Image (cartoon, rainbow, N blue to C red):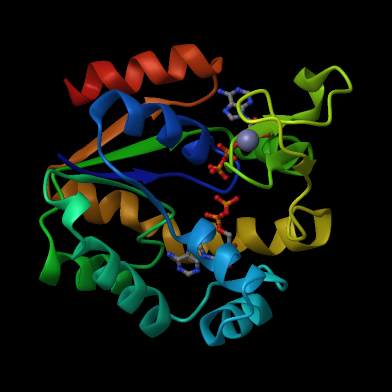
Length: 206
Ligand code: ADP
Ligand code: ADP
Ligand code: ZN
């Protein structure tokens, strides 16, 4: 099953992707995670990506598309994949259509007003990538899954978030219509608790 998770920053894509990848036994491919690991390793891609991510802008399409194309060619994607955070522009979606067949696009719908709090309160595991929210951590500072330290992403600050939400509205939201026209769009209310959202996605995916 070739699935895309679509949604604004903070909608819960990463949170759901981890659970869905486990249930459907397909790889979870997050372009944000790929960029962050390149930044950590100070690779040429990482150096380019950082200059955009720090400003809350999108990394250029040519760079991003090439990364995803190469990733989808790997053996573990033969039985499907779960893309989280790609595509984010119509050009990326058009490119993806030339090298893979998208079967389902899950749009995780969360009211704009709730996203800022989700993002600024987000803490992520520096090792396994699991997402948490300060409101539910009860002061804990390590990952419940693997024990590593939780960190706040450099781009999860109010200034960068404003730019990311604007970029989402302008460049990514048009993908909802793009995939609706192709007849593969599934919309899920992302404003419930994590378990409830997970169950609605599974129901829609069948
Ligand atoms: P995305 O990958 O779409 O940017 P995340 O999955 O990282 O979003 O979630 C953003 C923040 O919102 C995290 O702090 C996460 O713990 C929290 N979160 C995710 N899903 C829910 C939910 N259904 N209800 C409340 N908070 C959520
Ligand atoms: P979030 O879901 O919270 O927006 P991600 O981890 O998906 O965060 O992405 C972090 C940043 O990485 C984005 O703000 C953007 O700068 C860059 N990025 C991730 N995916 C893409 C993409 N498909 N195209 C361009 N830039 C991307
Ligand atoms: Zn962890």
